[in-house]
Image (cartoon, rainbow, N blue to C red; front, side, top):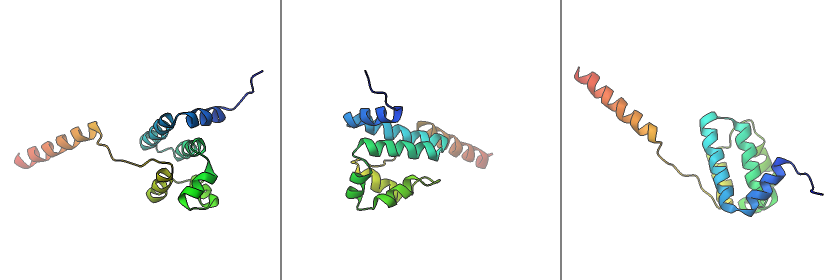
Length: 121
């Protein structure tokens, strides 16, 4: 008989078996946070990512932070500050990066063109 597990347990096991899938998972979570600003879902995703990559105790060792300090960051009603997030991600072998948004480039060009047209007219 198969042992029943929660979706969270299944996901952690699956992500721990495939590092690139885990990185894709946290990347997607960050992108979704940028779209919907849902801190609770982002922090849940970050906790799952951490568990899949060795867990809280291992992260505490790598970051030289106490598990309580990490738990406080992950239990906040606010998103982690960029320094804390970078420290956590770096300890897990990842980093934040900046990528241009295709639509944003078009908006910037349109806005610049509109300003030139207004100034000339």
